[in-house]
Amino acid sequence: MYKELDDKDTYDLNVRKIEKEIVDYLIQSPLYSTRNEITSRILIYIILRKEITQNILKDLTGYSSGKISQELNNLVDSGMIIRKKIEGIRKKVYTFESVEKISTTRVKNIITVMLKWENELGKMKNEMENKRSKLETMNGYNNIMNVIDFYLPAIKIYEKFAESLE
Image 1 (cartoon, rainbow, N blue to C red):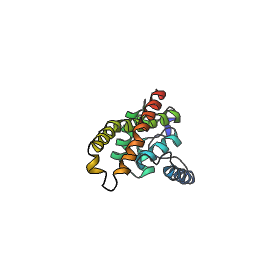
Image 2 (tube, helix red, strand yellow; image 1 turned 135 degrees about the horizontal axis):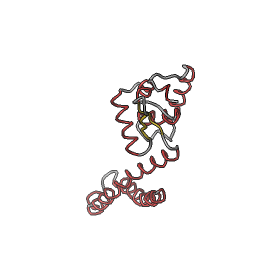
Image 3 (cartoon, one colour; image 1 turned 90 degrees about the vertical axis):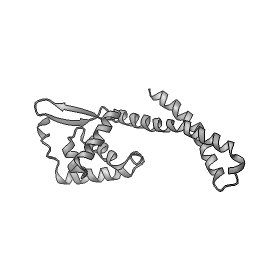
Image 4 (tube, rainbow, N blue to C red; image 1 turned 60 degrees about the horizontal axis):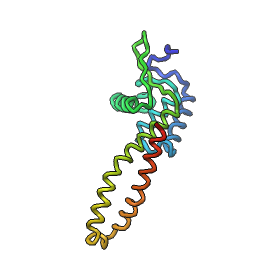
């Protein structure tokens, strides 16, 4: 199984072309458009290949070894993917437990970022309400208040959703 892990891509050129088209298509989809492109490309290639080395990812994406390494470390640290050391050949491959685990982890990470905004939005709302007489005549005040009033209750819903994922 691991004989092919000599850092040379053994996929047929026609298969690689189709694979790239799939990756490019998925990058544009709502599933992956919320992440930065390099992370999404790496994640998609890992899902498509099931197991892949850093060097093959470098060849497929065109990104530098350092950037690939950084993104792989972030994905491993977040729990989305797994780094496996292959005994006997001193290679590392990157894989995943399940697409469900990747998706759940992504949703949790997005919600965690959103939850960090709860305090900030609350502070903004209080400050804007305290200075209402001065600010409400300014263009955009009502729009900002509407956005804050929309997101604060939504964050509570996200918080309950995150708890249900535990």
